[in-house]
Image (cartoon, rainbow, N blue to C red):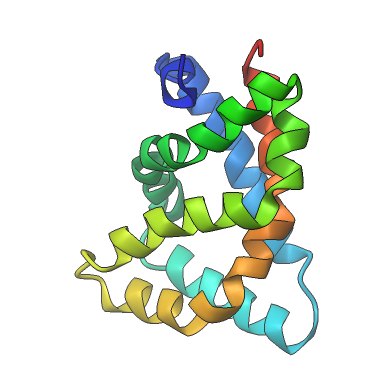
Length: 145
């Protein structure tokens, strides 16, 4: 059973999205320095597009992101520790997630969102890699693998 299939139940989806929103907020607020200021500003700009924009985007991206992560997760299941495996393969996992956001950003008509994403895209891979252990732990909380 793929990751996406695990999260088909509406209540599970809502809880997962809430947990992921918390992870994103924590990751962004924990950033320091000049890069952190830029990330926080871009995140604030995107959040300001309209109320619930980030949550809606996450809900739309989640099925594709889970599909992209599923091969790595499945390898981890075979090894007996999908959470640890996803975390150990943070670079590959980040590439999988970013491939989804890259494809989606090409289709957006929202100039604010596209501009913020493009401005941060080169540096964001490291931020996504740092978030992968938290993501893996959250996914692990919802699976019985």
